[in-house]
Length: 211
Ligand SMILES: C[S@@+](CC[C@H](N)C(=O)[O-])C[C@H]1O[C@@H](n2cnc3c(N)ncnc32)[C@H](O)[C@@H]1O
Image (cartoon, rainbow, N blue to C red; front, side, top):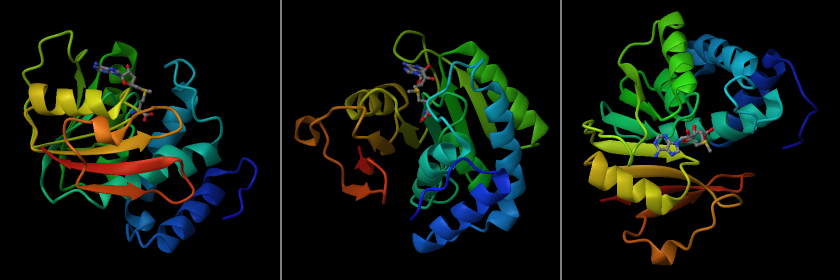
């Protein structure tokens, strides 16, 4: 798909709609689009203050973390209680929650300003059953237990596996593995993924684990 220069949110959402259609992802942007747009506009304003500047443009944001989150959301079983580990300002967990209101999601993050930002967004968008959760996992006590963990850019798939199983007691894990950033040999992991799903036009694979 041709990459436009930076764009308005309207153009970006038209692009995203086509991309979802081409990827057979059937979320209806008409239903959750306004909430997603409000969240992304707030993120755009605060990204620099939150020290989260990896996405350089609206297009990068939509084609990267947003599309990847919607790709992941398709593979989550219904009505699960999940935790997004190292969610930053809410990627992918907050987007997953906006697209999949049936899920109960904890947004786990160790940097307090990012957690405050997510609390503000959750309140403004009147989202239910989604809980920003301040914890530096592995360094602070974390009593939270969930059935499923998910993450993007948590450092490495092996850190994700270790925390997901040992700290959160999860039985499943879905990890957006950024292969260009996180060097990892899947053969050396203590648990092998049951599926590795490449994400088209992205240097990213969705790793699905049963613990
Ligand atoms: C590279 S950023 C990725 C953020 C987001 N998941 C994304 O895809 O844009 C990693 C985030 O994980 C958080 N993080 C890393 N290790 C953590 C830990 N042990 N406990 C809590 N948060 C952690 C960092 O503070 C940071 O916000």
